[in-house]
Image (cartoon, rainbow, N blue to C red):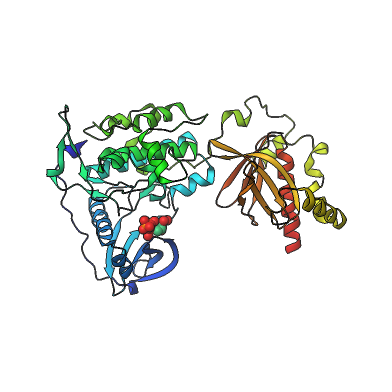
Length: 489
Ligand code: ATP
């Protein structure tokens, strides 16, 4: 890339302004960092919205984070002055006795991570688009002689049009010292390497092998992180996962990861070419002008990089494995034409008279019949191994399901109880793994006889009933929801 031949740019600070907190209306808190709070604010002169990061000076000094904060400001200044897209911009900074204030562009749509969690796994179109934007952002960053060193889905924010705004430059490195450039043996290319003083910068799951072994960051360390992020967008989870950082690092060094079934073949090929232990052999590591070898990978076929920042991003949609949506399925002729949110329910429904929708579910019977309820609770307390796990609540429906997170799935005992609650339990370890948060907004959607979604504002839970009673699950949850709403009204 051009970075090997260009001099690093001078750091041009954003002109100082005499802003104070009085120039902004401080609204809600939109995020908390380890020594900062981020507020949504409005400029009283222009009515423009900004995110203001308020850093507690005493906390920064106590935690010895002065360098980190200065580095973040310098990098943001460099990027803002360069006027390149895909980054949070720093409009101004000011301070008072207690705090430092960073006035930043407001990323209205939050973190990329939250979208991955919400849909489980991105479809290939969304993955191609967002991977393309991240790649262009890295081209800009590296041309400015900056290595991010902590690229991950939490640090990729989204603006009001759903374009990316990369943030969090506290761990970034501005490559200024040319004496630190080293000639790689047997290679005419001059590769910039940066020696770090600290033992570890970044986040365990996305850290590249060279940062672990040589304590050295290359531009291609960010390309490693890109490989991890593409893997995560496609599958729902990062490639290197373990209970603790030590094991994660061992896996990274051994390149110990797997592709789940249904992982897109082109995306797999690209990830394999980015997750290469030798940093100089990663795809793009030897590119001089842009990352053309990555741009021309089949994964990006059809993507127009020149207009990406002006293109309307695809609506982020969940990936549905072809085996799950039922390839042999034929649309019945007897249904009304037109599309509704209930389409799947209608399509899956049997003939109206035999549809379980018209009957009361056993779960509702239990809830509304006092005698049945008392008898069932007594039996449950005496016989069910799940009784204590659900805190002694009456279990209205239970069954083993495969709970999907992206392309990964785990067997769980799903328990719909009074409260209402939907708990899921590891049936082997007999431990409570979590709960689907219940609210007025919770809804269900059967995808076929086995697969159903429980949709909550922050996440869609992708569940598979191997016995094919997805409709019964939806019916039970819907009935309990209606009953719960009516008792509250
Ligand atoms: P740490 O300082 O511990 O590394 P951090 O970098 O996430 O954490 P901040 O930069 O203070 O800390 O950000 C806190 C949270 O605020 C972030 O997780 C992010 O969700 C949100 N946030 C930060 N900047 C913006 C922004 N420009 N627009 C919208 N939300 C933001």
